[in-house]
Structures are given as C-alpha cells and as structure tokens.
Amino acid sequence: MKKILILVSLLLAISLYTGYSFMPVYLEKPKTVEIPYGTPTLELVEILEEEGLLRTGFSFLIIHAVKRKKLEAGEYEFEGFVSPFDVYEKISKGLHKLHRIVVPEGSDIYDIAEILDKKGICRKEDFIKFATSEDVAKGYGLSTPTVEGFLFPDTYYFSKNTHPLKVIDTMFRNFLEKTVDMRAKLSERNLSLEEWVTVASMVEKETFRDEEKPLIAAVIYNRLKRKMKLQIDPTVIYALKRRGLWKGRLTKKDLQIDDPYNTYLYFGLPPTPICNPGEVSLRASLNPAPVDYLYFVLDPRRKKHIFSRTYREHLRNIRRYLR
Image (tube, rainbow, N blue to C red; front, top):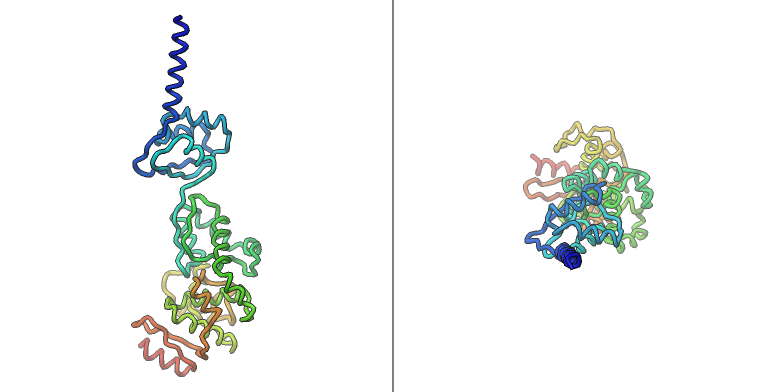
C-alpha cells in the first residue's frame, strides 16, 4: 500500500510539475531575446528560462522531443501571454523581431550601408561589397556594374543579421513593383532602363523641389543632345564618396578629380546612377518639361533654381544670385 501511495504521489507530482511547466507566462512589457548563432538546445532553454519566457525548460524540451524542428538563432520579441508552444513556434519558424528601416529618397548605397549598419541589420562593408558587385548587378539583368539606383527608397522591415543579398533583393523587387507603369513607357522615350534611372538620380540630387524636377531633367537631356558636358556637382560628390574622399564640402580642386563619374571632365552620363531616386524624380525623368533650358543656378536665399537658355544669361544669373 505504501508503494502504491508513493507511486501515486510521484505521478501526481509529475503531473502537477508538467502542468505548471506548460502554463503560459504574462509579460507586462514586450521582451526581446537574442539567441546567438551556434547555441546548443540546452543553453537556449536556459536563456529562455532566465528571460522569464518559460516557467521551466522542461516544457520546451518535451515539445522539441516531439516536433524535432530546427531552432533558428536570432532576435525574437514576445509580449502578453506567452506559452511554451508560442515560444517554440516562433523560434522554430524563425519569426525574428523586425526593425523599421527608413531609406530616404536620394540615398546612395553608402548612405544605405550606414543606415543598415547602425540598426544591426548587416555590416556596411558587407552591404557595399554585394551592392557594388558586377555579378550581383548582372543577376538582376542590369548592364551597370552596381545596383546603385535600383534600390527603391522606402520604409522596410528587416531582422538583425539579415544577409545583404536579401536586403538588396527586397529593395530591387520593390523598385520593379513601384515602376511597372513607368518602365512600360521607356521605349516611347527611346531610353534604356539604366539611362533613365541615371538621369533620375541626378535630378534627385539636384533639387528637393518637385516642381523643378521636370526642368532639371530637361536641362540634362538638352545638354546630352548638344553633346555638352553635364557638369553636375553631385556626380563629383559621388566620385569622391566612392574613393572615401568626401569631406562634406565640394571644392574647385574636387572638380578636377579624374574619375569617370566626374561630369565636368567626361562627356555623357556617369557609368551608373549616383543615388536611388524616388518616384517623383523617376517620373520627371520620363516626362521632362518641354523647354530649351541649358543652364541653371541656385538662388541660395530662396533655395530655388534659376534657369536660362544661353551662357550669357547664365553668367548674368550667377552674378545676380551668387554675389
């Protein structure tokens, strides 16, 4: 009789312990837990217990013994009532915590790399390596040696330690989705995809005023038709950024840098876009204003460009607005 009572008590204790182990916990505030790569299952369970996500690790181990799914490392977020099944489901499916990433219009790949690095999405060196890879660009059917210009500026959600190629793929596919109707009209303008985006990137960098963008685009196309040098300052800035020489201010000496992106020295378009343009700049570059302007200068007081048709008029505007 004693043995039976001991056995019953033992079974009851196991049942109570098991029931207790599988009871959900309540988190008053969202809790983020990071599981390092290569963490053994037992250590993972210890982390979950210490973080208060499990009443005991026994429940998680029982679930894992039955389901035998791969447990993914990474950063996870939990809130409210959380059961061992919820924890196991999230980790086995790799449902990582997502971070909001805002890529402003006109950001180049170096700007994007900094944003991603600060948020812990991926290392900037790794992102730049893949973004400037000719093989990666060719994989997307581009004739440019980088994916610059084709990473659509937008708000994205990525988990930490995301591979740069996944980031690039997400942003490139967003570009394709947002430009479907525009790309359909490229043949009407007798433009290649790369030419169009390159012009749009210069427009993006030259002005923040939407109403000026078709005018800037017109100047670029008009100068190209007349085989004039474009002389776009942001192309020189991009040349300096590529070489790690950009100090935040453009000098006369910088305008002499021997680089294919320097449109003060070289005729035609730069080898690639110089940033990732937004929708307004892309549309403006597809539909330039019907004007014959060849020059423009910025009025620093009004932050507005003054356009002209002749060089004499342009010099007059320079004296008037930059004296």
